[in-house]
Image (cartoon, rainbow, N blue to C red; front, side):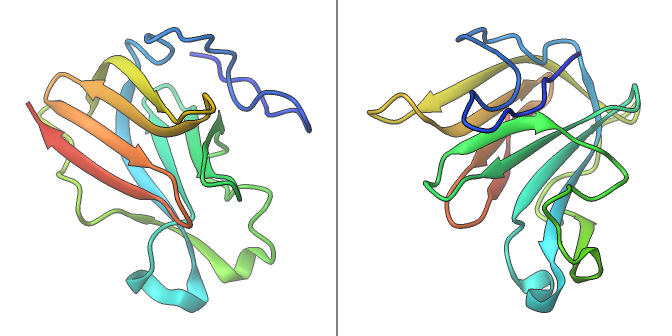
Length: 147
């Protein structure tokens, strides 16, 4: 699985061109929120990092226009924009179930929901046991919907 770095002024994340299988076959071992510490765990994450069993990760963040950006993560490091790093932390998202037997969710496909301008505002990562639904806004919202 390869996710390209976001280029300033260019398209965000991996060039997916509507391909619903951009993460197909990947195994997600953990889902970590990126939290701004002064807000504590009461706040929503500013980004969500999907940690894969091959050592890579995928970072979903929301832009100022409330759209989603998909870029490579740097797990276990924090994203470069977490400045100063001492004010930020990764933390497990407590509203998600534990990984299924075998220790990982296997991705069967993905889907991006777009607004009227064609901008991604929601990403659905489909797995064998259910779907991760990631919604951009002022902060991130993530839920797991069982099949």
